[in-house]
Amino acid sequence: MAVTSPIPLAGAVMAIAPAVLMALAVSGRLAMIVLVIFVAYQLFEAQVIAPRVLGQALELSPLIVLVAVLVGGKLLGIPGVILALPVAAAIPVVIRFVAEWRERGEHSGEPMPLP
Image 1: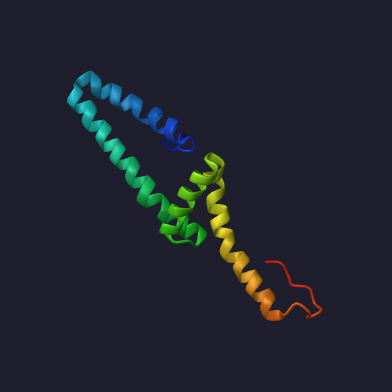
Image 2: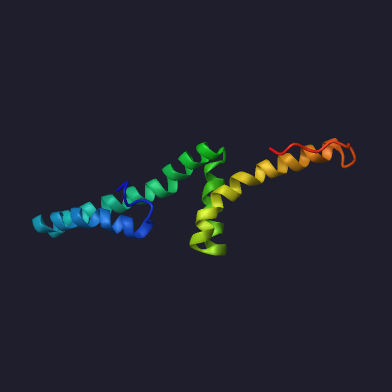
């Protein structure tokens, strides 16, 4: 699954297809159980684990990670999903930069160092 994870839907289908087909050779019920377990795992990973891991890496809350990806996807589609987390992580940095710039004053004479 790790090899196909960059391709969300296609990767999931390619990962589960062999397991479901082998289970189907045994029985239809076993194939359904394998499919349900895999779908439950995928949902848990996508909705719980991934936002927490990405949130810790980017110093964002899991809720912000989830909302950023959803908003990015709604606004720009796949490019929005790809750009959502870097933009969400950059926003607090820009806000701190602007706040420090305002504290120093516009006419201090010395340039503001970039972060």
